[in-house]
Image 1 (cartoon, rainbow over the protein chains, first blue to last red):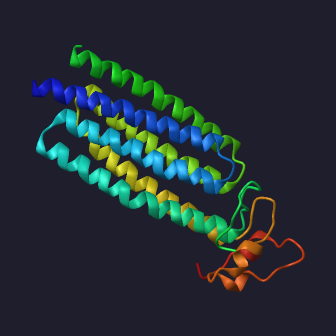
Image 2 (image 1 turned 45 degrees about the vertical axis):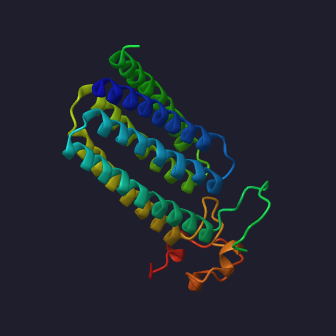
Length: 108
Length: 130
């Protein structure tokens, strides 16, 4: 019973995580400028890989795997905003413009 | 429904979806059009590779793949930080436009933000204090 429950849960997590990875790539392709693309890449991308790591933790079920997967998820959740913020700051400082359809530039 | 069959289907579907996201992300790396776009696409490529490795770990039952995923995440983070510093220290866009008006209010890097009429050579614009 518990075995099959873990299999069903990890299968569902795998599907959702892979869907989020695809959504992140689609957003990277469709959105107009670097600042909006950063939304999809750093939020949906991190969520997708984090869900897939949680899925392998649920699938394996032993303590060391769960701990390592949790450490990996925490690490990605900590580093993704830092790198995205650093990249946005660098791009804005150098002068890559916002898309013309943007309505407001709060840093101006 | 057989849970093992469901998991196998989910793993195969995840491989397909992640491969699609790989292709789309690489298309963005090729198309650009700017350097930060390419750096961001490489960042997403690392995230997708981490997810791919996790799915591979489920498929093979070999949990040592998690360590590889963590190491790849560390390398990807450091690469993105290094590329961001490079974009900042280069101080100009691809078309040779020097660091311009949006940055003129920023408190950082004020020494090289003086507006210049003509495009300046690349090595002349590299700031020494970054």
